Image (cartoon, rainbow over all chains, first blue to last red; front, side, top):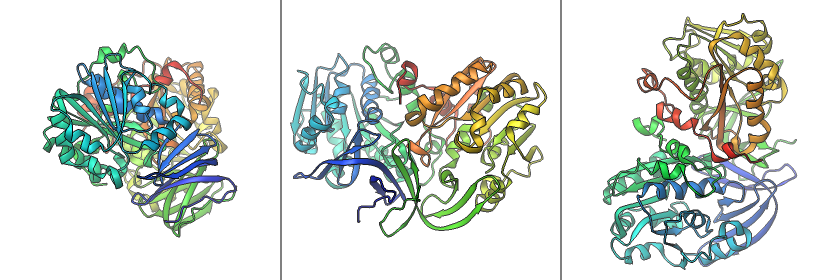
Length: 289
Length: 289
């Protein structure tokens, strides 16, 4: 596909969502970086209103302006659902934004980030330094390698929470959306273990991604699962989900601890957590997308 | 501004959000209608994936695919907040989608829709017939005229709920975003009276529209106000609000009635209503946008 442009005199980065018949554009000042890593094509743009923008293989990954929505919702709901999370593994998440949020929880003792592409992290350090502010926390460990293999090799019961902060289910991330991977996660997780994974748009991917993810997670042994709802303006449709599955129920969480949280957030709080658990009517009664 | 286009061989309708530095596009098959009414420029497009699309003065009003989000959230939360809504006035709302939702409530006795532009309704009847399915309900009345004047002339205490379903606060709708208008609404409303108004994007318009709207509504005499949060993919950022203000508290609603609702919705339910009341952390602690 030829890279589309908007002809109004300004420069724009545009991501076309072919299947959805929609496109989203950000006005840009200039391209700050462009490289083909061993794994993917990474671009960094300076936008006029959304800060810096990271694009991988043509898909928007994050902007400075609104990534807090995604990173907070990928971390805090799961962490406040587990009774006492100490050992966390992030699969993907190379921009380190999720890592930063996880480390805000004082009870967490160790966070391992496993991203296949070290270049994403090196570029985040340069262009999104605020997201990398906690990379030198003594509890943080950055490993660059294959997340699927890492989970396969993990000792049984050795993790409290797996966060799958990946690209879309095409290309290198495809295997992260499979029952086999969830089964390996289930084995690696402790008694109250949880997995949370970004699961795309309720408007565009309910039948194609969200429902199959629930089926695969349940088939892999998880007792409960729910798709947390939140806004994410730079992703297709602006409406996104993170699907949370657990060996125990996932709709109850440590409300008191969430209300008394000792760290700052921009979007997440206990009320927002409750709100994210609310399922749209069509999730409950079915509908094709 | 020249109408921008995406150069990838397909045809696209694009709305540029100048202030936000973003743009949203839908792939189109053809333009079905184009007219300059006495009030505005109305276009109807056939899209490839979002059904029909209505555009007014270059801004997306609604698509067949996702308008249920907006119309349900503009009506049901307010209706389930009022103890017994019987007399409803919709200012704007010419596409009749909000009217249809309001009429799903059996206790409602009369709904008056006051849109300045009859052509919007006539085109909705032709291109969005599903939204106009209840236009001949004996409780429905369609009046084409100036909503600001209508409210000014309304008998004091004669309405239970005013729904302001307008275009953006530029052009003909500007006066609908003013303290003077809210004061007239307050006077026209009964004891438990409520107003709900579309109030744009939390990401893009928090400081410029949402906060001032709360201030104006409170200054006009309303005792309480809250911005309901919901997704709306075809509007800028995909994240939208409806601000609800009342002569009494607006954060409590008839939960049992909402749970037992005897009509179908695609998004709204009692849990979603509770979720929409949750305020992002930056709403509570302030931040400029």
